[in-house]
Length: 145
Ligand SMILES: [Cu+2]
Image (cartoon, rainbow, N blue to C red; front, side, top):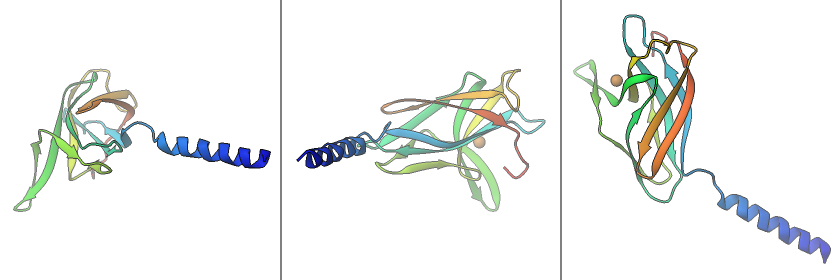
């Protein structure tokens, strides 16, 4: 009887763990790359996963270390790569928005004088149900990125 009770208790614990799936919106694989020499534009790549129960739209982002942050998408037309600002990115339930080289990215414009490779950068990303605050060390940007 005591054994059965223990098993039941364990089962209850496991169920409650499964229900507590952490925050509904998660940023992973965040990379913040410094401007290349001669440029004033850094870039941020990441994945944003919607683990909530409703679709969300990511509206915009800002950073205390940069004058301005814009959401951009790189498109290739007639063999020429261009970036255009995008207003928002909708993420369906269970989906992940991918910010990557050659695709969507956050353009980090005009860093402050202390924001150099190796220094911390914080991003504040606004979406329908709240604010994501994430940070990473700024990395030097490779020519291929
Ligand atoms: Cu851009």
